[in-house]
Amino acid sequence: MGALMGRMHEETIYGGDPDFAYSKDKMVRYMRSFVINQPETIVDLAVVEGCIVGLILGEYGTMVFNDTRQAREKLLYVDKEFRGGMMGPRLMKRLIRWSYTVGAKEIVGGANTGISAERTAKLWGKLGFSPLGYTVRSRI
Image (cartoon, rainbow, N blue to C red; front, side):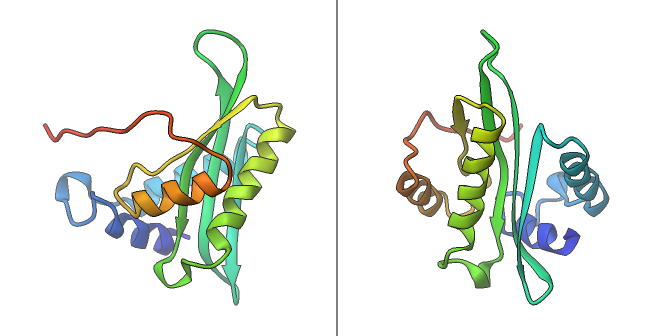
């Protein structure tokens, strides 16, 4: 899984930037925390011939102004050569089903890595999601 995440990192706006270098160990610890903290978190994998080629990580928490649960997509990635099929939508639908099981009243997700933002927005839209805002970035 660390290799898949390394490929993901290379595709992001951070790939190749030494200030935002990829740490396989940190990424593995981060993903492991999602497995350990279930059911508050979800990990779902797309596997082809025994190789992990996609994944989704999600979590839930309460809103800052009350105790309503909100599910959040934290990471969604499908390896380049496996995009365009049903892997991404299946992972996203898995997050949606999980959100119902944990009693969430809202799901938020998006694309904030610079990888296919328009394509991802279109896919979320097909699943019934609408734009909520936008993400901005400034290097300092």
